[in-house]
Length: 184
Image 1 (cartoon, rainbow, N blue to C red):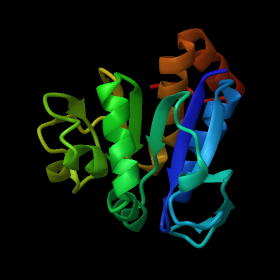
Image 2 (cartoon, rainbow, N blue to C red; image 1 turned 90 degrees about the horizontal axis):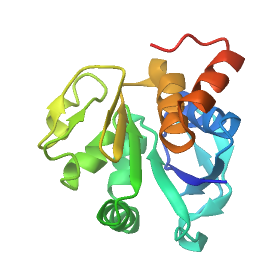
Image 3 (cartoon, rainbow, N blue to C red; image 1 turned 180 degrees about the horizontal axis):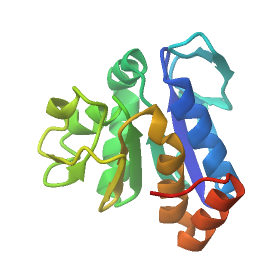
Image 4 (cartoon, rainbow, N blue to C red; image 1 turned 30 degrees about the vertical axis):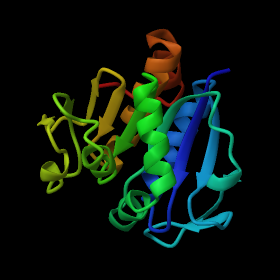
């Protein structure tokens, strides 16, 4: 089973984290929810707390296929100040592994110059944080090894794009059908 890590920081956008995680699990991905806070319980932007699977410092990322960053303004900012996470993102990119970020979180990838020459999307108003990227304004954009999403309303699309990337279109369509979701 393909391994995916999704990272939570204080202030994460709950819809993006939970819906994306659920969609990936339905797509038969092995998903680990990682806290970058030093605590297992992480509180989202709207006061919903999630008990994560592992603390960043205790996780083994060597067998991962993809790293996923949910947004939320303060959540994305808190991800962006986590040096070890940024080093891990750079390592995955260097190894040609896959990265995904939604809403405000693509700012982390943009700040690391990982979007240079790529098409990308983000929450409206964050276009300038996509350093070197061509902003598309679309709900979900895949370019090379990176998937970006626009915001909470695109969380199922974002999760399905990840499933399709790692498990194929047939599996993504199967998950969409099970969710009674019409893919755009």
